Length: 257
Image (cartoon, rainbow, N blue to C red; front, side, top):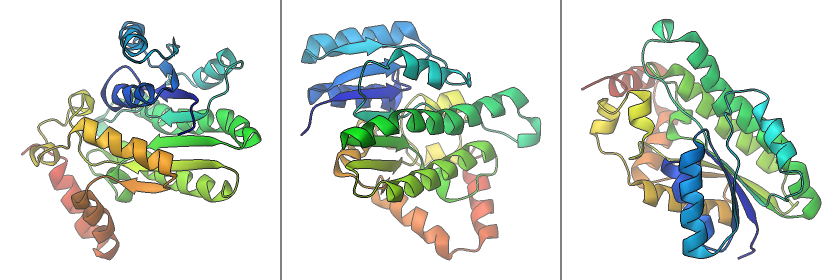
């Protein structure tokens, strides 16, 4: 396996922290970014001690449109071989009642920052003839999501964007992977207010298992990787289901049981 430096966004907890541990265990150096400097510093210390890798902490808030370029400028002296666009969050409720600014921040973090970071670091990867981009999407991206409408729409963008540029990059040595987990046991559900929804009552997947699947799919250069047979069947059955049925089913699972 080729060693390099990985930039992981949203690295302070959940899938981001687990992915950082996987990179470190394989001997890759790391740059960790998220809003919480204390959590990043603790994770960095853990990884340095456990694996002897170099770990740099770069706190930033990707809800700020200027943050991706500022981050890239600070890293101008460090070639990025692996870009993990993991940062993101969701909101739950009737769109008409949700906080306007939070919905806009959700689009900024989940879509705009992911796009900007990819654009900023991709040219260097292409020039060096090697790179891996891992965009953490979701099975939510395969259908509309009543009561989580903005989140589902952002993940649809991530899948489409990843597929488009993956095809453009064919033959360059750089790959793009959209990883699509279903409900996963992380802090995401509590932060989004959906831990009591029917979706999470059905049983979320183990976060380490999901992160490992994403990590392996990225290294293999898979373009779209769906975690778990149940999620795979669900994502593809939508193609053959009336859209009104899909909308109403998703609305049902996104509400409290």
